[in-house]
Length: 219
Image (cartoon, rainbow, N blue to C red):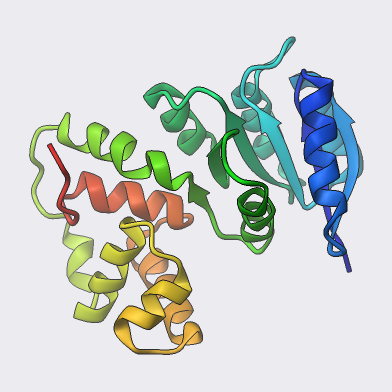
C-alpha cells in the first residue's frame, strides 16, 4: 500500500518539483497540492493523507499555524513535516511545540526528503541534521542549570546511552552498529526511553537530552 502525501507550498514550481520527486517512488503517492495554509488544513481533514509536507511561509495561514490546527483535530492521523529556507530558532521551537514530526531545510537532497516522509509515516520524528545541535543546544545553554530530573533515574545505563545517541542525531541503524546490537533491540530501547520520560517522539527526546545536560554542546 502506498503512503499518501499532501504538498503545501505557495510556489507552484516547488510543489511540482517535490511531486516529481515523490512520483519516482512506487510506495509514495501525492494526493493533493495546495498553495496556502488554510487549504492545507481543509485538504488534510478531507483526504487524511499519511504525511503532509508544509512550507512554513505561506499566505492566509503559515505552515506553523496550519500544523497547530491539523494536529489539534482529535480525528487526525496525518504526520506533518515542515520545510523552510530559514532555519531560525523560533521556527524550530514552534514546530516542536506544535507537534510536527519534522523540521527540514528546502536545501536537503531529494533522497533525504523521500526518507523523511517514510520516517514520519512510521511515527518517528526528525530535525534536519544541519540545524539539530545548533538550534536545540543554543536553547539549552540559554537556560539556567537545572537539577537532574528524577525520571532519569528510571533509565538503565544502556537506555541513557541510547538517549545520548538519539540526541546526537544517530539513526536506529547507526545506534545498532555503535552498540553492536540489532535494530529491533534499539527500537525497544528507544520506546522504553520515550515511555519512561513521558516524551512524544525522537524530536522531543533530542530536546530533552540537550536541555538536561546529557549532551556535550559546542560553545
